[in-house]
Length: 417
Image 1: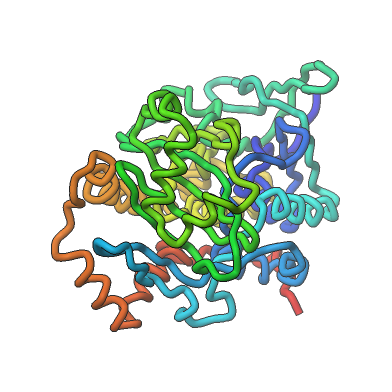
Image 2: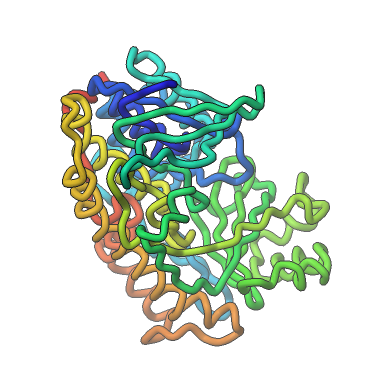
């Protein structure tokens, strides 16, 4: 029988940040990741200013800066009949060193965090280890059962506290006492790539087509594209053919017509277009004795605003600050994990409320071929925003920091030079 102080289930951004912070604070922590590496197609690659400041506080800014990346400093949307691009969020206008969103392949970020955590004697990362169930004793979660996906063997790992960071497919979500609450989503997302040239716009660019919306992320030599399509329309739209979709995409995005027509590589089959089944939900309770859920395990977010990773990292930092000392002393109890939910619930719930408003007022009408239900004329509003740069700081600050900044435990800090 194996034992650790804190068992972290899932090696995504929340799990790796929590593991690193706890290990630096002297807590024995074991992270279990079911995959053999961190490579995934179209994982969220946005690293927001709040996370960049955290990496700086941890002494990792220089190594992060050495990773291949692209900086997004503006949010641009097409407004009006001609689809003119207006900048509605200028991240570069924010004060501070990190006034941009870094686009970095998530596997590079996770490798950086894992390699740094492995320097701590109390940290262990076990890949190819899939959690199959929780260990329960007298109503308390006391660890997990797992399966080694390479050897095929099974085992048990007992822990003082188990933290579920394994996303919206988490085993914890099946526990009825946590009370999963689901919200309707009007869309799914297609992920695909298109080549980019220097004469193209820069930053984050939105576009609108016939019953779909796109967000195009500047990745240097290519665009990472997300096409929002009506919920459940994947099979019917694919039956119409990839060429028809690409043609309509080019028609709605005049400046990129040359990309779709001549530049390579571009999608050649539907295998190059990945489907994300969008869901939005939230646990009523993120905890029970011996268990805490954070990140997507506690609150699956819509891709609207692109801040899911930002929230997950914030959850991990808040959890480390509240739990490091009780875990190290062996006094962690239900009050400690409750404190994490009290701290983070308003941010998660508030963000989901804004996403639901965006779904109902903007996304759903556009996907149904109707005008968005927002007051005023979009073109006039965009012109006001363009002429008043200080108004752009609102959406820019929300995208950069969310509702506020979480601070890690002092014992985990290693400031960059």
